[in-house]
Image (cartoon, rainbow, N blue to C red):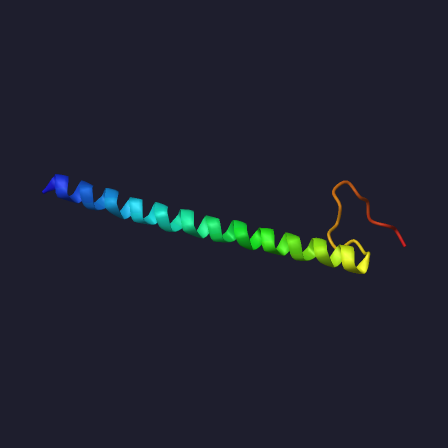
Length: 60
């Protein structure tokens, strides 16, 4: 009986891992789509949309 519980636990973990990997894949695609949309908007409107790293805020 103990072996059956371990097998069920391993199967549940494998399903959870597969679901997590699929979610990760979709999130990466979503992030890439957002990045592409922002890049296209920046090129089209000639304005920076994302804050560049290392820039300082103006004190106006």
